[in-house]
Amino acid sequence: MTPRELHEIEAHQAELEKTIQELRRSRQELEESRNKYALLYDFAPVGYFTLNREGVVQSVNLFGVTLLGVGRAELISRRFEGFVADMDRFLFSRFLEKVFAGKEKETCRLLLNTCREKPLYVRIEAMVTESGEECLAVLMDITERRRAEQALSESEYNLAKAQSMTHVGSWSFNPSTGEVKASAELLSIMRLRPDETTHEAFAGVVHPEDLNNVMEHLRLGIEHGKNYEIEHRLLFRDGTLKWVYTIVEPLVDSAGTVVMLYGTTQDITERKQAEVDLRNKTNELQAIFDSITDGITVYDHDGRIQHHNLVGPRLFPREIQPGKSCSELFHPESPSLPQECPVERALRGERAETSHVSVREGHKTQYVDITATPIKDALGEKNRALVFFRDVSKKRLQEMHLIQSEKMSSIGVLATGIAHEINNPLTSVAGYAEALLRRFRDEPALERDSRLDVFPRYLEVIVRESYRCKGIINHLLSFGRKSDGVAVPVDMNAILREILELLSHQPSYRQITVVANLKEDLPRVLGDPSGLRQVCMNLLVNAHQAITGDGRVEVTTVAAGEATVSVTIRDSGPGISPDMIDRIWDPFFTTKEVGKGIGLGLALTYDIVKRHGGEIQVESRVGEGTQFTVILPVCGR
Image (cartoon, rainbow, N blue to C red; front, side):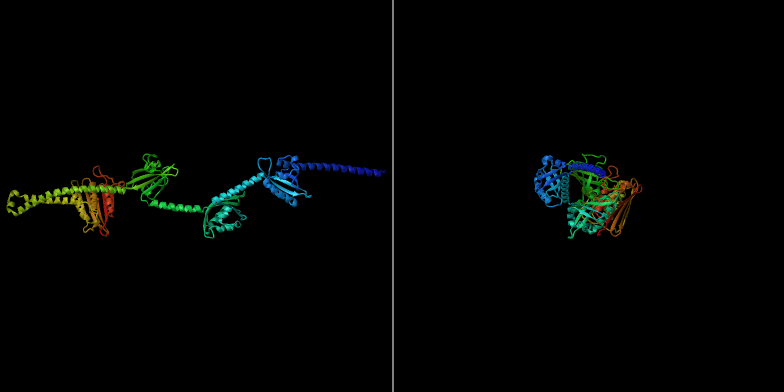
């Protein structure tokens, strides 16, 4: 063998050894790769199956074994269909047919029967191999996803039902793209089809009068990213209207830009109509409430005012206001007086009746009858109180006037009887005195008798005084006549003269100077003579009684224009203080000493003047005196 051949053999041997080493290295790498892929195959998070045309398992990875819960040896050569739930076996058969019929990947979802307690849902994807006799299938556990989908589906169903029941629709709006998404209920509310879910279609349903306001709110929501609420109307092609209430919440990114608006829109047409009906009913009840002439107040179960009509605050302006407690009116000195407070008694279920006297500075004394009745709630747990306030001040005054009139009538009857009894002897005395005077005139011899010189003068005095007494008695008789209530023309000057004549015989009044400025041809007034006599008598008696010692009373009558007559009575007494001047008309209010008056005179005087359509005014200054002016309409006016 030549050296060259030997060298070639050695080179070839070295090349073979190198090739063998490369093959060993490749085999090792291949083995390592096969082992790695085997690990990936076995421990992949999905199940790998090889199935033949009959659906028999040819191979399976470890996750597939774990997924089905059967050993690998037991699983191989078994039909996969045995693990499919009965309800999905037909679906699997069709799926397997489609896989072997085509070359595309097929997918379906199945419910499997396993040894697990809970159902196992899988998604299977399969593709036929090149040989066409087997298919490779991948199983993924989608149980949790299926549960989530079911929960989402149930949630969507419940949301749709809730929206349908409450007439609330949801929507979203992307400001950058203008895309609008809306729920089925919202489309139903807006009367739009699914293909009409556009910004323009939504705006077209909004009432034209409300459109600017709606768009302005939308613009501000996009620009400022703030939540807002709005009520507006929808106007449809057939002319019908709907009211909707919308709440909008913007979604803002990290840069502060609004990327989405989410809103809910509720159909509140029925609520709006109910509000209108309720408002109309409330206005109707309030009108009835306010038309009642008594004050009406409703107190809640805590004794605080809930409602009142217009009359209540007129009677008690400070105490009858919403939220005010019953204690402020009925027992301001104590927060609770359950035995005395009519409201608290009504809240306990009792019916209470009482009277209340209100004395406020600058106002007349008020006499109010109060009736409190419980209002029971539907459950019978908490009562409220319905309280009626009836102003009986005028009724009290009329009752007092009636009592006084009856008393004066009784005195008049007595005075009439006495006057007749006195008039008869006076008539006899005056007649015999006049007869003696005629005797003296007829028999001159009697005049020459010096013993009888003073007799004619004495007889003249007896006649004069007898007739004066008869005049006084006649005045008493005119006061004693019972009024028949018929209005007749009355001469106020004549009434004043009668009263001044009577008062002039009072010993305590003789030191008082009376000045009468009575206008001649004074127009007559239309009225009750008895009532007008009482007015003048009360004012003149008060004027005389106001003066202690010497003093002056002025009586003036004038025709005040063409429609009225005024009677002014002024005294020089001590006057009335400003804090008392507004209370002099109140019944039972008097500044006189005990035994000199009960405080009815001016109250009755005021009532009589008002009944005649007149007015009475008072002016007084402390230390200077008091002046009363009575203004009465003349006859025929």
